[in-house]
Image 1 (spheres, helix red, strand yellow):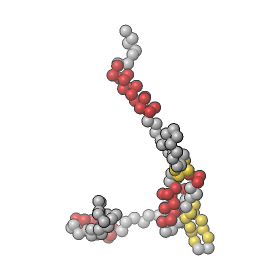
Image 2: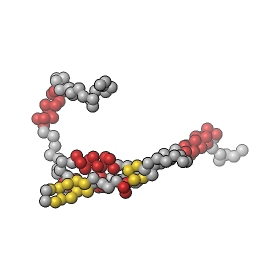
Image 3: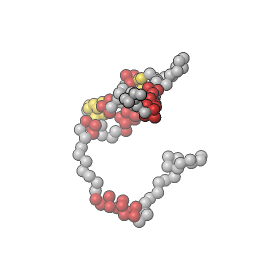
Image 4: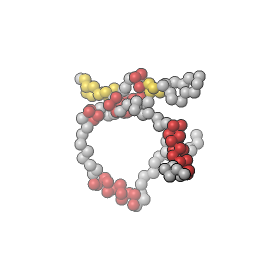
Amino acid sequence: MNTHALPLPLMALVLVLTLAGCTFPRKDISGIPGPEIIKVTQDDSGFRALAPDCKPLLQPSQLNKSGDRRQAIAFGCATYTNLAEQIARPQDLTHPGRYAGQSPDTAGAAVKRHRDNTVTPLRGTRATDVGAKD
């Protein structure tokens, strides 16, 4: 009898965990860009945020089966392009201002409206009505 052998249930658990790591590998997200991919330029009209060039971000689809051709995906491109288009003050990306904190008056008023149940409800729109019918 081998006294150094693992008990059968423990050996089975180790085997399952080892195989689970082999059959379900974690996706490598090291190629996803950071926010520094948005470039900020300054000209006579002020600062501008420039959307990234998506071609360098293209990664081959990892969902391919043999003979199944899928498009490459530019991870992060849509997010960073939308962010670059929405930034009102692009210089905030390169020289952010200090956060002054919440005004006690507006914070207190919000808490009072919540306690008094006088919060203004959202307008009925397709974005706020789950399952809205046309």
